[in-house]
Amino acid sequence: MTTTGSLPGEPDLVQVLDENGSVLDGATVPDLSEEALVEMYEQMVFARHLDERAVTLHRQGRIGTYPPLAGQEAAQVASTHALADDDWISYQYREHGAVGVRGMSYKYLLYWMGYEEGNGHLADEYIFPMNISIGSQLPHATGMAWASKLNGDDNVVMCHFGDGATSEGDFHEGLNFAGVYNVPAIFFCNNNQYAISVGRENQTASATIAQKAEAYGFEGMRVDGMDPLAVYAVTEAAVEKARDPDAEPPEGVGRAGRPSLIEAVMYRLGAHTTVDDPDAYREQAEVERWRAFDPIERYESFLRDRGLLDDESVDEIHSTVEDEVAAMIDEAEQADPDPMAMFERPYETPTPRVQEQKEYLADLRERHGDDALTRDE
Image 1: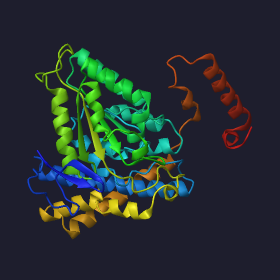
Image 2: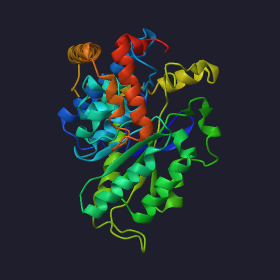
Image 3: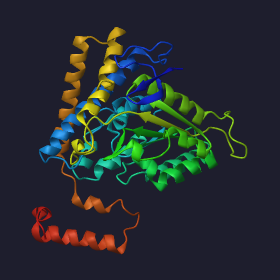
Image 4: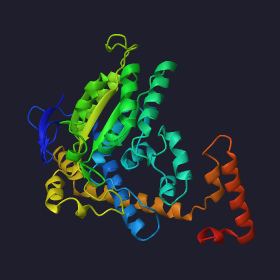
C-alpha cells in the first residue's frame, strides 16, 4: 500500500510523500482520479484560509474563541475523502477541514459567533454536532456505529479526537465497547503533539497511541498525518475493514466488519485556541522543524510534478477560496438569529428550570428590548 518513513522524532509511520512532496521509493499513490487529487488540494487551501480569517475575526472581536487547525488539513480532508457521503463523522472542534469537504456554508460560522444554529445544520451532511468537552463523542460514535450494525446498514462512523482525549475515560469506554460489539467505527486520533500545553510524552507512557487498540481487540495504525495520500490510503483500508461483512472477527465477537484506531501524527502549527500562547510551552525551533512538512506545500509540490497544478491554477484556486470565505463571513454577519432558539434543543421537553429561564429572557426582552442582552442585568 505505502512505505514507511519518519517525521521529526516519529519513526515507523506510513508515508507516501517525503518532506519535499516526492513519492518515496516503494510507495504506492492511491488510486484517485486527477479531479479528486486536485479537489483535495482545493479543500486543504480552503481550510487553511478559513483558519487564517477566523483567527483575524477573533482578534477583531467578530467571533468568539476559535481553535486553529493549521498543519492538520491533510488528515481532515483526506480521511473524509475515504468515506462515503452518508458515512457519519463525529468530531471534536478543530476538524473544520472535514466539515468543509461535506460542504460548508455560512451557518458554520454562526456557531463561533455564539449561535447554536451553527451546529444544527450539520446533521444534513451526516456530521454530529461539534464537541467542546474532550472525548465525550467517542461513546456516542460507538453507539451510532452499533446502531448501524443492528439496523443492517452499510454506514461507517468516523470519530475524530485529539491525543489529549486518550487520557479520558470516554476513550477507554468507547473503544472497549467498539471492540466487544464489533462495530463499524474508525477512531481517528489527530495526534498534534500537544493537548493544550501538555506534550505528547506527558500524555501517556505508551510508545504510541495506535498500540492502545491492541488492548481493545482490534488494529491500530500510525500514519503521517501531514501527508494526504498516506492518510487516504490508511483510512480507505480501515473503511473497507469496517464495511466488509466477510472480515474475520475475533471468536465470540459477532458479525464481521471491524473497528480500527488510526493515529495520524502531525503538528499543530498555531495556537491551541485564539486565547492560547504556545510560546509558553514550546520552542520556535521545534515549530520550524515540523513546518518543513507543511501538508499544503508538500502536496502542492506533488501535484505540480504530476502536471496537475501550475502557477496560474494555484493562483486561481487561492483567489476562488478567498472569495468563498469572504462571502461566508458576509452572510454570517448579516444573519439575525433569534436568541430564544437557545432553549429549543437542550431537551425534547423543556425542564422546569429551562422553561423558567426562557420566560425570564422573554420578559427581559419585552421590558427592555434586545439591547438588554448586551447589558449586565
